[in-house]
Amino acid sequence: MTVHFPFQNTYAALPEGFFARVAPTPVAAPRLVKLNRPLAARLGLDPDMLESPEGVEILAGKRVPNGADPIAMAYAGHQFGYFVPQLGDGRAILLGEVVDLDGVRRDIQLKGSGPTPFSRQGDGRAALGPVLREYIVSEAMAALGIPTTRSLAATITGESVMRETALPGAVLTRVASSHIRVGTFQYFASRGDTEGIKRLADHVISRHYPHLADAEHPYHTLLEGVIARQADLAARWLLVGFIHGVMNTDNTSVSGETIDYGPCAFLDHYDPAAVFSSIDEQGRYAYANQPRIALWNLTRLAECLLSLFSDDKDQAVDQAQAILGDFPGKFTDAYQSGLRQKLGLFSRRDGDEALAQDFLDAMAKAKADFTLTFRRLSDAAEDASRDNNVRQLFADPLTYDEWAARWRQRMGDEAQTPAERASAMRAVNPAYIPRNHRIEAVIQAAVGRDDFAPFEELLTVLSKPYEEQPPFADYAAPPKPDQRVLRTFCGT
Image 1 (tube, rainbow, N blue to C red):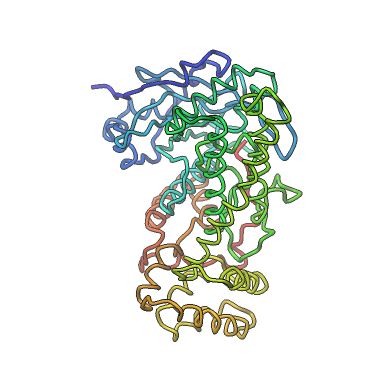
Image 2 (tube, rainbow, N blue to C red):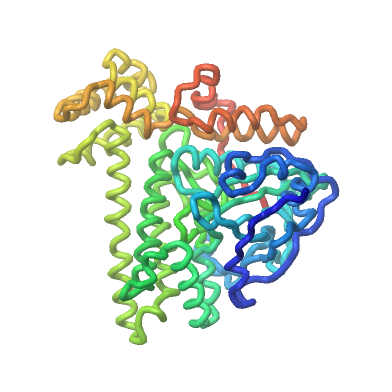
């Protein structure tokens, strides 16, 4: 019996200029590291068959399944503010699309599956470490409730890839509602291909925003829809302390999902200027800069759509600027709403923003751990005697005491019981995040010792980030000084 993928490919039916047809490069000795069995079942796939020798060969790119139409997608992009007119999938190949059990169309893509016409002298391969990092972080983001691409499988290829040293090669099977990016629109706009922009926009509307198809001005409302999703996404990142690390326009999905986990990281102590990416030397994509960069990227998308807005360029620009002007308000509303939830506030009152900001400022000054502070605050909301567990995170505990008095006074304006408030707070303040030092330990064990037990255990913990897990309590702890990860790296 063969592995069956119920492919229903639509992107590969677009004109040839949208992609290059290319098959994965076969690998020597594929070995399965991890299959996401629940996700496989949700996609309508048979997990047992995917774990068979034939299934593993498909997941590693050694065998192409029936019905696949493998392509590498074309796109351009601004990388750290500098425009590159042709990038494209240099180490990823889209096998095809399936419609999952919820009726949602999903891409199935192999990342690290060999060179493509867009590889730009790269080897098209991926090392094991970055594959494990993306698997861990993308699945953690999904468990945290943040829109994201997903990881279906990780496989070892049986071959080495050369980076600074020889490393085990691997392939990630990635799932997304699509891999269409702001940079995809830029690819056609930079060529003056208005018809290509229109074809792409129509495809995106059909796939991601079907309710806009009959709108009076569908391309205006498309931009509005992408802006709304990106504003919400940026807010969600900040609320869990996530730093994408490389928010180039080619890493900005028009579906509103988090995509391309390269030098990503999570805050330990709260620092708005935090940068972990080794390639972000100027701090362009620092933690607190992410909303501003999201708007910058969306402005590039708006520029691509101007030809669809109006034949009058000035009028088109005015219309685009009016739509872009909605981003700050949408982001602020989502972010402030999230902060109120993290503080256990059920209604919106004057002074809430100042209360939240004062707490964040105090955390920054004290270098208090972002995740742990909010989680302990959830306990303190239920029982004031637990305030001391929060106070301990501040160099000057009186700073917390002064703030906590204001916080408790504010909570007194609402009718919820302490238990109800604490429960609501624990539902938005995770106990467990994919801490950077934990990820590095997983990678070292896998690459250095072929030991995947730490990988499996970390995935188990992160699958329930909002629940107390006493056997894994140590995973909630910040790194010790000698465990801190100061730099993260891209996998290319």
